[in-house]
Image (cartoon, rainbow, N blue to C red; front, side, top):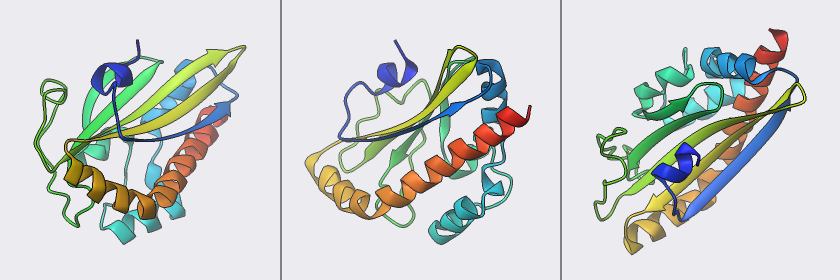
Length: 173
């Protein structure tokens, strides 16, 4: 079972993207953790528009945006989590971690997981990013759904740019 399924087996919204990389899983995993996501002008611009940090943003530094590391399986999977009211400007982000994420259940809030999984086959690795959002009541589901209609295309662009950056880094060696 994957970490994403353990931490969020049921969800209201989902987005997934993947890319094939001509490198072994270990090299892709290293690149995933070492790539500066803000090297992409597209990601920098979209982060800036949202009021997010635009310098030196490796996966481990997403804590600056209140993402918490929920779990890591070396060369296989990295799972990040976040809880808040994402549809609001400040987000009202809550303090969650791998110990309390599953139990977090405040009305009016949503939880999100952001997963990176690696699947190696015949010298190539498929890197997949999947985002799942669980809204914790009907009001948050409606608010997030409205927000998601606007933000989903930009969210997808960020994720696809990240995958391309990791691919470039991993294939370069």
